[in-house]
Amino acid sequence: MIEINSPIEKMFLKAGITSRYPIVVRLEGDRVVRFNEVPNDCLILLVEPQKRVGAYRIDFAMEMVLKRSVRVGPALAIECDGFEYHSSKEQMRRDKQRDRWLMANGYRVVRFAGTEIWSDPVGCFREALHALEWQI
Image 1 (cartoon, rainbow, N blue to C red):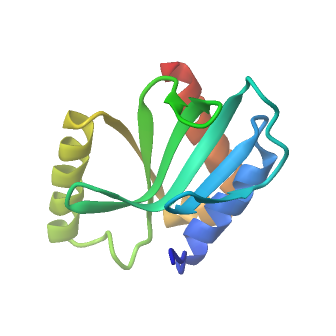
Image 2 (image 1 turned 90 degrees about the horizontal axis):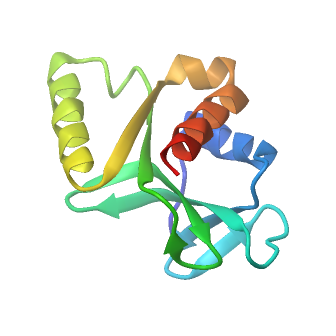
């Protein structure tokens, strides 16, 4: 079972309820949580918390899909960087290395500082959504 333990990640995901798209959260396998009704033949915002991509686990993968599985445009890798785990020079180096790998493998990486999410979680979610829409 996937668990979101980070308070900033919980805030970011909860902010997604304000999305103008139907939002579906895939928790594991085919188990999903729908925040609102998903009509047929529409774009759906698919959010996957703690998604494993290669050797990495990203905080959230976001993509627009048509119906169940037809991806429309590239996916985003959303990283919610709390100060405790992302402030050392070594961690910053690893984050940059990880970002390059994700980009080389088809993801656009969007990082938010924990303080950004604490002060405006809805604004952060909307910014991520805008980055995703821009790619469609």
